[in-house]
Image (cartoon, rainbow, N blue to C red; front, side, top):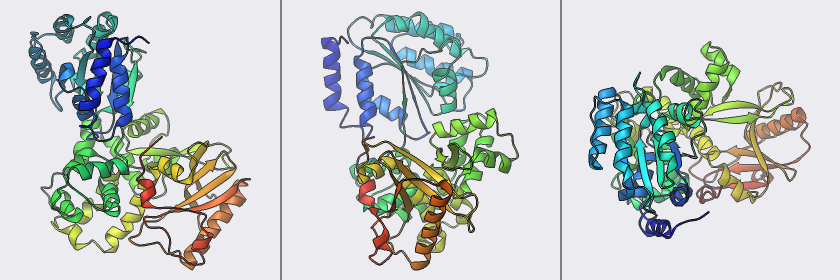
Length: 495
């Protein structure tokens, strides 16, 4: 690949300016840098959950190097969308009118950019919240298609970036388009929430220097969503922040749940129904179980809904090992931490402004912590593999539920390794080293026996405990082969 000297200088500018401004996102920054230096036109889609930092990543990475930047307007009609686009056109010396068609407005954009191409520098066009532009009968997509296919694709300098929180729209109309944009996308970036390590870095830079247990508790509530983390204050404890942000009826996050789904999906109710069902099931559900609970068909429409929720990082699918099924099927679990938190506490909080401070050591919070910690651990599979020293080994992970044992037996996380070992993982949240008691140990042994006998798996089994501070020493702790602690979950993600 030929890279011009000007492109090399452009990349060098980013190294000393941009990298210090953006927390985490190292891989995404490397990808953007490579795309900026490529010798062909690039059409890039950036998508992910609302509040995850998509706009911040692009605007901070390119900063004043964006040749054109227009953002759609949430919950607005065609006229307002075109007004926003025309305002952006004015900034590059191009004229547009909200009465113009989208085809005409993109023609104006082309004219405004024409003098910049062919100069050896990237000409980056950023269309943010692009699903908002596509109002009913607006013909936005055909105009975007025409702009790219008849003009932009001809110039290696052009780097077109489209972004939006309405992930289902991005996937349907850009990534998996069956129209004029079919196979036109050159790259896609799915921006995920921060890991624990990135969350710690973000909080530290913003003057919040909490212990890793406190940061984990924060993650259990807000996940790795930068916007939510930005609302925390150094002069408050986590419980004080919760009372301010969520405990009060006027708290900024009290209505976030409804706003979140309304901004992501044109018809949010079916998605919220699935989320509500999954939130009530600690162990996850299969597609058929979800369909049965909601009294709907388990066919293609449900598949699309589940895929949309996965693309937005609300849920995650896990394969389920079962010799009775004779194949690997999928089980779905709610993984978005704020959603899980909201559905657990919304009714409990009511109008009590200091609910969290008053209930910090009650069973109300303690019962939720166990489930939330399981979800945190399962979002850090890469860190678990690194701790076990198996990053270079093929690993399949899944859940298992007994079909015959009484009482019912389930294992939430199994790492099935290519080296003939299976890690059976138990995830327990505690504020001190965790004590395995006799009755718990006996239940665990029964689960392991049921797993071996029902699956007939012919591999070595290593019992692995994932806890904040390890295990208290006793005769049962000595039966545990591997221990993973909080510090292990905070290592940088190396994939």
